[in-house]
Length: 152
Image 1 (spheres, rainbow, N blue to C red):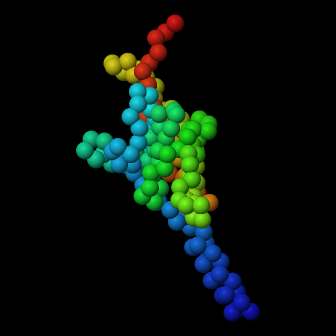
Image 2: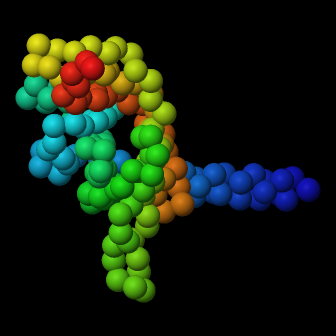
Image 3: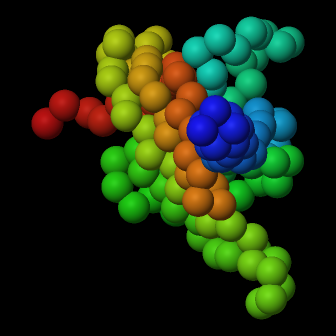
């Protein structure tokens, strides 16, 4: 009986280890993301400045977004507010790359219009990334910026 319990415990431990997340959400490199007047950028809440800039984990201009998983940059399309999915499958027909889905639950922590006329919103929350059937959540901070519209 003790042997059976030990075997079951070992099997449960092995299953839990195999169910652990096996992908990495990487920081985007300069040039991997977007350059537009209106954008959303997210970075890990623990990110340190590098050359005066926080490395981002997601960049979006409202029509497309980018995230890097396991060293590969995935173009995403918006399917809801702060929800994005892979634009295309990568790989060959026999071995398609896993799809990527990002769902960020964000709140505005500050809202302002700066001296250059940009509407700026500081964002914070969680970014859930699903890749290859596995999911992980990253705590993020970020920024929404867009030229402020003239009052009518």
